[in-house]
Image (cartoon, rainbow, N blue to C red; front, side, top):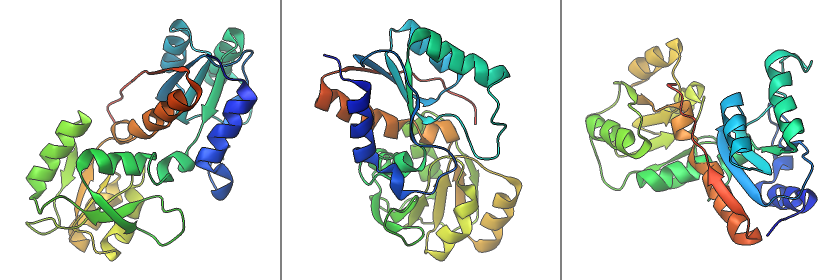
Length: 252
């Protein structure tokens, strides 16, 4: 079964509500392909590697978390950007990308899916608002920092970097997938014993130690694999299309 590009675009937008976010990039259909969608390939980032593998797999469209046209980047379609977009256009493949809407969806989003894998119960947003990007809640039971590190490594297939700063027993966790290390103080202010995100920067180390909160950098790519797969599963169920996730891991 195939679905028209316009129908699928409307369905994605109704599901993820991109109009509700002030984002760093356009969300939705970024490159329009040439045919209805019978096979949808899912990935984290629309890198050349993902596009080449998607085209080889017979994709009519690709859905990712990290697409193109970020604020502040050169708008000219040259070099690496030209090669990527040319590959899509020559193959007639559409590209959808959803950034913050895919982080924040309450059940399908990256943060919700990470919580589901880890057994965390989300109770509130790290920052107040109707569509929180990060969450705070509780693990199934209190655990040590080493236990939490091992659980992250097992569930995400990625060895997290741990900066010790919090108590011996972790009873409150906060999390925000991807490059959200800058929210560590907000996580501490919300009452978290540990904060989990994808990346780390130099100030994160000092903040964890001086505030008294554990920090775990669990991988930008590793923490953001799951939202796109959840949305893809919904698309397959709703439209009867073939959906395939292609993982292109990176070390950060």
